[in-house]
Length: 498
Image 1 (cartoon, rainbow, N blue to C red):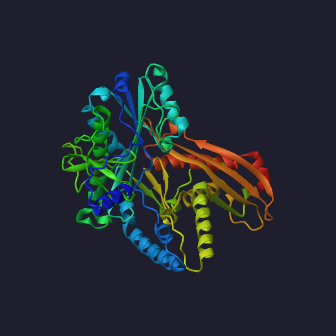
Image 2 (image 1 turned 90 degrees about the vertical axis):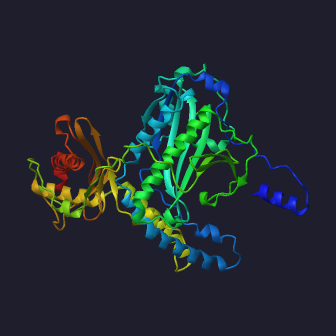
Image 3 (image 1 turned 180 degrees about the horizontal axis):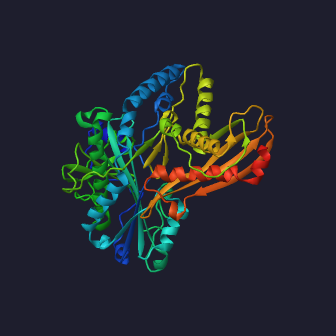
């Protein structure tokens, strides 16, 4: 911004000046000496989130600069417009659930890394299960059998105006523990980059973003899901190409650092971007803080035969939960007044919603606080999105457990009896070559009608090797049955019930 203002003042004074140069970037390309020191490289890629991210409501931010009471009206109008747009595009996220972005990411990276050469020659590639914290990043360096580890964290999101899909990535390169001392390192130039860097010194850090508009330059809508898949997959491939170029050749503009500076409004930030080069009809830029970006209306086609991978989703709702078939052979006796199942994730969402509503009331009767789209979403996932329990896993677990407990002799809805409350601490399904295994960990509490605790315990049910199932739902049913048995056959619980 300052750069353009200064340029404008110079023109007004009729003074001829040389083109402005870029400010020193917050990150720099991999230095030649360090590049030569990395003889072997292990690349680890992961997704920061499993589904299309939505922008936050910008209404309050826009209204802060408006004096007097006008900000309230502007914020309210802006918020309603934003929520209307959000409702229009929310189904797009659900339409993309079956697209296996993780598998596509692995395919694209494997293909692009082969073309890299240099430091990327013969690099190995692995996928991490989810976003890594500092301890996880340190464990990667300790376990690596190569000279250095390159950690890539990808994400994909809608722009604030819902007209662009941004694919983003952060990259951090550090020597492995075994190579420490043999590879020269450098300190990070800016503290802001430490959020995605390895603990300690790094050889290289970089932020990437690639964007594509919706066909017709309107908003992304559910009917554009095939084009959205192309935007996501193409963005991953484009970032992979920028990464390879940056690591192998170094991000130096072809014009010797005197490129054109512009503001890319579709990125939704105030950064200035310097044009670096044109590749396959797309323009590559570098921001004044060192990020690399790609901009254009289309992406080059992916390799022929690389069909978009899909996830085999299983939707399990209340109908299936009500039809749950108890299968336990155990027998128990007793009665409880009611059973409640809670999930910490659901509780966190509800608590955030109550907090937001409280803030809304403080502003007046008309809500003005941004509403997170997760408030309206009642999907809980097992196995990284392969199984979706709807409307939520709490209802499903409670319904199935109640059916199982009735079958083994524990009566429900008996007046004057204790109440049972279960809190889901862990509900996961994992896949292996032997089939699906599940874990269900619950914290139980039995209270009398006055609320006094009669019995508490934490119980974990897992599938054994011989109990592995051929799908996620069947595996989860195994641990539901075992959870009911562990509860009803606990002598302390039985005594408290009686």
